[in-house]
Image (cartoon, rainbow, N blue to C red; front, side, top):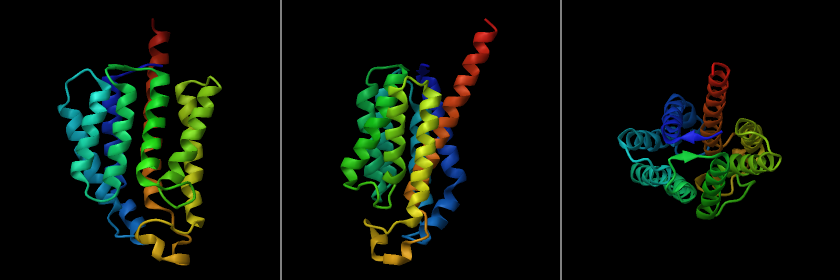
Amino acid sequence: MDISIHEFKNMLLTIQARIEEEKDYLSEMDRALGDGDHGVTMSLGWQAIADTVQAFEVEDCGLLSREVAMSFLNAVGSSVGPLYATAFIRGAAVLQGKSVISQADMIGFWTAMVQGIQERGKAERGNKTMLDTWIPAIESLQQAYREDKDLAACFHEAVQAGKSGMESTKNMLSKTGRSNKLGDRALGHQDPGATSAYVILSTFYEQIKELQRMNVQKSLFK
């Protein structure tokens, strides 16, 4: 299934709306482990993304991703800003010059994004961070793609693995950031960064499913 730049833009706007819905929940979750502002931070970053998407008129998904990266970075001063900015910049290289995104492009885009987060953040799976969602999700995404599953099925596998990874952070000690000073007090609390990562991933998957459903309907009426 191919995705047009118009559809890609709508996906990003839908993620922004979903992040806004979860803003208070994410901040409440963060109060147990950090500054309590993760929801606000993500809201600011994704609102900046939405503003960029709405103003963007060039038929180039790669350039859009690069512009989105800069918008997020300029809006978010915390550590998450450079992480997601790096992710979108890496993803931009995969989509450069393309007005339509193929399945292979989309798998490559998300893979490059997560690799960028990991390299920039210097964290690993098991550190109680967003990577506990992203790494298993991308591993499952790639495996499903190697098994020739369609795009929706690939992201279904990614979401399932990402959810398990997110939930596993409840049983982890924090090893990075301010929360690493909490010791055993971090146990029982799900990581807010892993949770917002899951919100992004699962919302994207829902959009993929909806596009697939619409494409099936169109084919039936041809």
